[in-house]
Structure formats: C-alpha cells, structure tokens
Length: 250
Ligand code: OAD
Image (cartoon, rainbow, N blue to C red; front, side, top):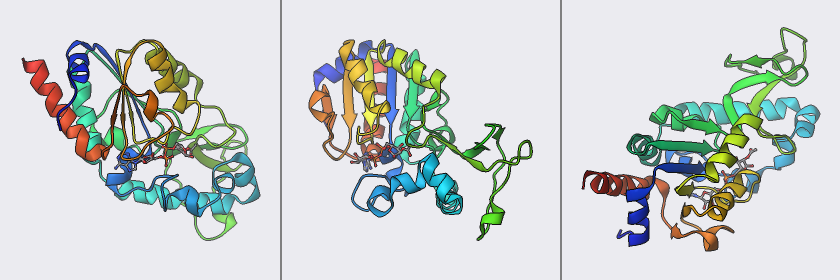
C-alpha cells in the first residue's frame, strides 16, 4: 500500500504517539470481538454478563463466561499487529498504548508502555471490600465454587470494568492528557462505540494531532480521521512498521 505523503511526513516529525486499541486487534489471534456479526454482544446480553447487577443476579454465569474467555486468551498468541506495535514503541521518543482489551496480548507481544482502560481478565478483586488478587481462580460447575474473599468473605469477581462502572482514574487521566498532547494518534480495531475510550481520538483531533484509523469497517469516527485504512490490523501494522523503519533510517 502507498501511504499518503501527509502520513509519511507525520511519521518523520512525530515525537509523541498515542494508540488506542480495541477487540479487533486481537481478532487475528482468534479472539472474538463484541459488536461484529457473530461477536459476543450479538449472542449474549451485555448487562447479564458485564454489569454489577448481572453479577449479583447470576455470579456463576458471569464467572463461567469470564473463565471461558480467560482460557481462550491464555491459548491465544499475539498476532503480527500486536508484534508490530511492540516494535513501533522503540522507534519514537514517546509512545503510549491505551487498550480496551483485557486479554494481556499487548504485554505478551513485548509492548512496555501499555495502559489497560478496561482492566485485565487475569486479575480479580473482591466485589465487597475491593481487595485485589493476582491468583488465577478456577471455578467449577456450581455456585459454591465461586471464590470468596479471604478478608471479608465477599464474592471475588474479575478485575474488568463493567457497564456502569468507572474506568481506573489514573489511566483515564493519562489517556486524556496524552491524547491531547500527541502528534500522531492511531485508533485500531475499535468500533468507537464505548465511552469514554471512544472520546480519545476526538480529543487528539481537537488539539491538532494527525489521527489514523485502522479498521476493515467504517465506524462513527471514520469521517473525522485524517487517514482511514480499511484493512485488518494484523496485515497493515507490519507494513506501517516497515515504512517507519525506512523513513527513520533516511
Ligand atoms: P467492538 O466489538 O465494538 O469493535 C471491534 C472492531 O474491530 C469493529 O469495528 C471491527 O470492524 C474491527 N475489526 C474486526 N476485525 C478486525 C481486524 N482484523 N483488524 C482491525 N479491526 C478489526 O470492540 P471494542 O471497540 O473493543 O467493554 O469494544 C469496546 C468495549 O465494548 C470493550 O472493551 C468491551 C465491550 O463491551 C467491556 O467489556 C467493558
């Protein structure tokens, strides 16, 4: 693919890069997205599986769903998109990767400066007292197997952000600050439907950053992007990486 000169110039001059990723970036690792045809939210009710109310109503169902997703995430491998982002990080003075994904694949690909906006599926905390646990809890077939907090006996839950809950304050603040001060912003593999994460490319744009969207499908943000690349992230990110390397050598 021939990239436009506006993008090549930005690669050449940009010092501070911000990236926002969503479920699409892990699609080529075999993990499901949420809003595509066949995605999770076309099969399940998000409020039953991903809200505090849903958890209190049926904790076993919620645990079973997250346990299955955890197992799939464990088996998945970072794809060429994750790997290219990890390499890109080394080529710019400042590089921040904000992800809505909870699968840990950016870390496993070698990215260092990763900030998880929606938590991490491999961590847990107590629904009642908030105590955090890094233990890989496993549950069985019955409700009795859901782990209880050793401190207060409350129910343990996955440390992911659910509908109606706030994002981690420090990470969200950094995401806003970085989006509003970067030169180049990539929004990759996200439908741009879930706020506040979906607001970040608009913040970047409002402060003059060059914003690139990578997504095989159009989103509500596409028309505001300086460059919309309608390709799979696992295919186009390695090409962008090669282009950056060429430009940086010259
Ligand atoms: P979505 O499922 O809403 O969007 C995934 C996007 O990835 C879609 O726009 C697809 O077109 C795109 N896509 C699919 N395959 C791709 C590929 N190979 N390369 C690049 N893009 C591809 O997922 P998110 O935007 O991440 O929140 O969803 C945001 C949040 O909604 C999630 O973090 C989750 C969900 O509810 C919580 O669970 C709190």
